Length: 519
Image (spheres, rainbow, N blue to C red):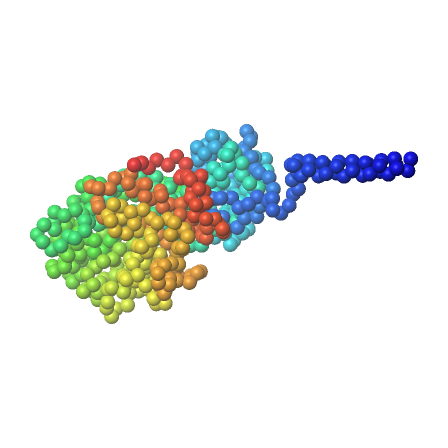
């Protein structure tokens, strides 16, 4: 009896141990019920540009059959165009057609748009998002609301069902005021319809300045007697200057009005550039008496007393066509032997345009154009080549600058110089708008320099339209837009590799319904 009891006890212990072991194995194999922890809050949405601030919550907002776009009763009439663009794009992205209504409040599944916000730090282009069972998008301006809608569209594209948004709140705003794209329409004409599509493509990644380079000519004009037959184009057509507009394509005042009205809805400004006193063969062919008598015939004669009045007459005619209070006068690559005359000419242009209320921009060239006359420091310098202008030196002298550095931001299709396509990996991994030369830090600016207005990338059509198609240009621009849009707005998402970024770019794609020529 005593022995049986001991055996029974041992058996009981072994049975209990075995049962415990089985429970442990089964319990470890069985999926555990999720417990709400901080690590399970929604991570920052993967959008381009990255959100500046994000506070994730749990769960997701969902579009439902009763979802609406609700315009705040107090402010809705100020951004009705934005709401209609958003509604159209939502249908393209999600298949849902949301009605637009006006109300002082939103219900479950609604997207509420408002200019009523107490957050004065958002500035003219920032916005806030609050996402729970409804979405609230608030900004101080219609542009801010518009940019917020671009973010919502991209967030939806990152959802497999294209119907959900992660719950949380965001504040988003740009680091730089100038986020530009320059298109050389002087050497290659683009129809108005394509310019509109470039506006839409830019705005999807929050670029805000479409700089049109409106006149130019083929390279190496020279001084020979054939200079009058070499290719040159001026792309604005006015009866005041019969014969000046290029015969293979030019824009009327109505064209520019239509483009600007369209661009305004997308938060984009059209900045005109009439390039003088170099790159001016279209002008010297129109007025041969104003061509330099000794230098390249694409250069205006700065010693001729009729040159400046003629240039002023161009501005008098064409600048009223544009809403922008910024005007670009070019002022690049004039003959360095005439540096003093060049400096006086640029100042005279600035005096005239400043008197009309314009801010003058020029391609930075002061290091090459020597002279004793200081150029006015209110002229904004687009720094495109460190041999022609040093950004730190310009800032030290009091200029505001824009980073348009050729090494990283110039595209010259099929030319064998500069970039055929932008080097997006280098831009993503090593570059930001303060950097003008990765090899020489002395050419770079410090972060948060108040005199650095931002950056722009450029397409120069040196090969004219004979070798380069519209589709060639579009392919290069579209490949560049995600990376430059992200970098010009602010820092990319922390910890995201280039490979991860390119996958996000693939997911969010381009502007909904974009219709540019394809190769």
